[in-house]
Image (cartoon, rainbow, N blue to C red):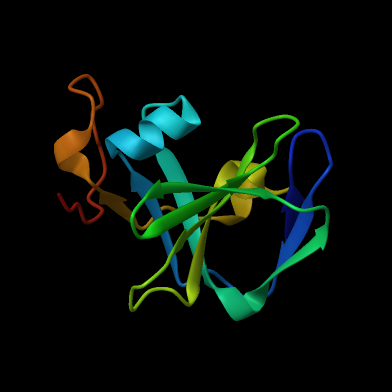
Length: 127
């Protein structure tokens, strides 16, 4: 499965299926995406490869690194450092060529969701 930035400067591919797909409502994801929530697909880093270009890295917190395009600002990855989860990469599904391949499995950081967001499914939720 492939994807890339809006401007085309960076392209990537992932192999295999994601081990997790979730909607994040945290303040950081809202501020960085400009949207009320972001849906990520989680993959093992060994299944992720940049095919073209070099993303810019931003440390959004002590243990989190996000990558994005310096040209068009498209986000591409969310990764952990100094954590047991540092072998994983989370990719916003909107940057994939065919995001309809993903099925939402969980809602996270629902304690920070905007009050007018209504979750109308029976998927797991965590604060």
